[in-house]
Image 1 (cartoon, rainbow, N blue to C red):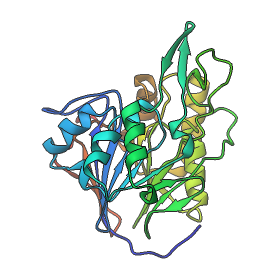
Image 2: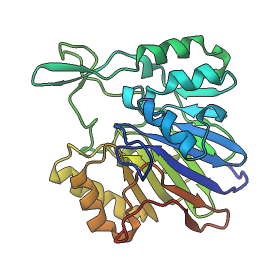
Image 3: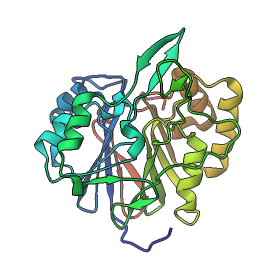
Length: 300
């Protein structure tokens, strides 16, 4: 897939994350707000409470989004779906059909439900169905914003990152087939948003580049799901990231403290741990700047 669409500025705000700036609510989840080319895009919704608290505090009305994209159906990404859909009948919703599947994490023989909450599924059913888009292949939202669709699993060292199953007995492993990412084309390359990267961070970035004729990866923002990664996977992930030379890595949510430290050691100031309240501006000319409040430790 290639295109010669207009290059617009992109403003991206982390609305929900496990960490939060002053006056904001932290929550195990993720939601990103993007404004570009006159479009407003909500990428994931967290569990719900933090989205409703942090959005107004940041001057963001989630119900004003033109598009809502679910990276996958886990509750910590889809939990805020119901209040947004109830108040925004015109919104275009994009997700994979498997996002509504029952699913569980099983540890010590205890099954924890991970699926989309019931009220979110009910709101999805009530939403005008012509505005619900079941993403099963690469999709363009407009001239500069695209979705990967299902991501090819190519690397030998990446897996879903957890004991995920489609049944409570643990007989059917969950490949998290609904995992997808969003990308935006800017003047200096691609800004990639990932929810949890259950398909693997490197698999995701490779697919994004294939869809954009090998354009450089400028920034990667979201959950990298490396919190359970062993040293071998962390090392191989870092080695695969080096030739991509991203200008910015913004690990959030499920990346894990050990992985964040390893990424900071490897990429220095190019790695900035994310948190709710952080806003970034990528302009047409290709320069990236920070728009206050930018809650980043000085040593980043």
